[in-house]
Every structure is written in structure tokens, then in C-alpha cells.
Image 1: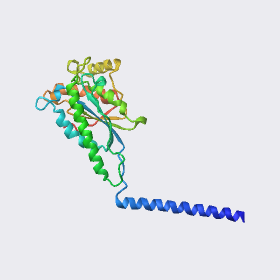
Image 2: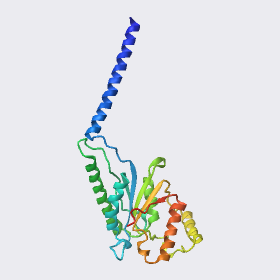
Image 3: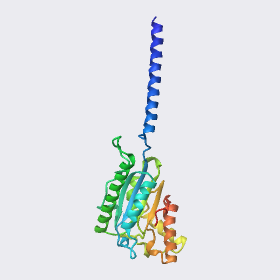
Image 4: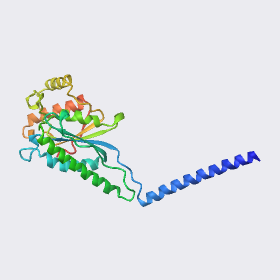
Length: 254
């Protein structure tokens, strides 16, 4: 009789487990039918914004604010960014007092809310923070330490080598207290390599493994001088893709 009881309990437990599994599957199907199950975003993203004088309105500058307002919404949507970290580009970006809190762009929310509405609201908040950061960068120590900003934001990269996507609203004309790009000899591969070596020796090269950099405003003030632009472009390509292991995507350049 005891053996029969044990067999009965096992059969009852198995039946309950099967019923629970069927109920779970049924709920999932109903949720899908009602449109309540939504894939959540999971991409780690960042924004660098240039507060230097060259970011003024066109035609004299590359118009950082206009580039920001055009490129950022598309970047966040296209990459399906879950998080957005920020860093200012100033004369000394790593030590700048300007900052903006990272934001979760696809947060948990009441199940009755439309997921697209939640994302749109968070992206609007992200844009407001970006404008505030730009205003701060322009007010406090304006400059163009792009390398410092890349290094600063690299700390927000996800662990484990997962992809990291960084939108950089800047003309990339590096100007800081120790390194001014227009003064360097960028005319040959050897001279560019020497400049990059010197930056490495001074600890100025950021760690950008598994990072994709998306420039917006890149080289715009050099565009009328083809030789200068070619040398400039070769320098940044050799530094970013050749030396520090980043990828460069020009999809938001204009």
C-alpha cells in the first residue's frame, strides 16, 4: 500500500508540473497575442559632445547643436540603445566638471504602458541632458580633447567584451594643453606613426576594444583643403582602427 501511495504522489506531481507548464505556455501565447511581450533593448551606447569654438553655427563652425539634434535620436533608435553614457569634449575632457548621469532608455515600466512610448520619453530626456552637457562644455574650459573624452567614456563600456557604440559629435580637431593636432606632421605614414607612438608613451591612447565610433561633424572645417583632410583622416583612421582596436562607422557623419 505504501508503494502505491508513493507512485500516486509521483503521478500527481508530474500532472501538476505538466499543468503548470501548459498554463505558462498559454499565458505566453496570450501575452504575445495581446502584444504585451516585447523584446527589450540591450545595447550599451555613449555620447561625446564637443564644446569648443569650432562647434558654433555654420558656416564658420560644424554646428554641434544641430548635429546633436539630428544624429542623436537616429543613433539611439537605430542601435536600439538600452543605456546611454555621456562625456564632454573640453580642453581637458577627463577632468572636466561637466557631466550628465547615464540613462536607461528602455526601463521597467507599468505593463499597461506602450513600450515605444516609454522609449520615446526616455530618449527625449536623453536629448535634454545632451544639450545641458553641451552648454556646460561651452561654458567651462572649451576645447577639443577628443582623446580624453574617449578615454573617460571607455569606463562605461560593458564587461566581457560586449559591443559598445559611441556617437562623437565633434570635428575631431584635437586641441588640448599638451597636444594640438594642426601643429603635428601628419603628411606621411611614418610621421603619423611617430605622433601616435608619442601619444601612447604619454598614456593618451584610449582603450576601445569592441567599440564602434560614430563621428558626426568629423573634419568639416578641413573639407575645403583636400590634402590637409586626407592627412587628418589618415591619422584618425590609423589611430582608431589601427592602434586602439576600434571600428569607425560614418553613418551619422552628415
